[in-house]
Length: 207
Image (cartoon, rainbow, N blue to C red; front, top):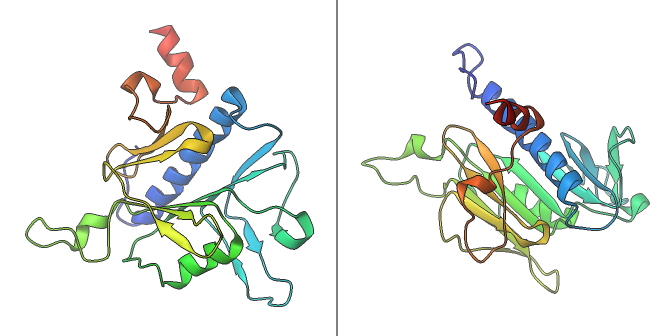
């Protein structure tokens, strides 16, 4: 991870995390193709989810939408026109989160199946080594089968989230580094399963 200059603060870390994770997911889904058809992975796109309410919108840090390819230029996304919603949302946060928060209500109303909240600075407000109340490294919410709310999923490890639909894990590796590991939900895969960016793969082959 690049050095973070104090005058830019945490913004640079968040930008770096989103960019790297977006590239990793794009590359993984293109190479592995765990679901049929085109898949779009992107960042900072405003999703409108209620035609009767112009303020009913949310802009996730990262999203995965199936059935739409990456070639189309999008400035916004109206779910009722497209007939599609994100299957996966990853959002960076820097404050306590509870299920009743407006952020989770937006993602629920958007229709996302899986929501991962990532707070790499979760420890900053802790005292005596204890985690701050209402904060954790990773939160994983999954839409309930009947669609009546989002349910917080238990994590076997505080820094790892399994996403069986795509055959991968998201794993915190220190700093603001959230990486993709290929593998099923039964157990966390070996380090060799850490997905590499194309330039990282070239570097590995050249060593």
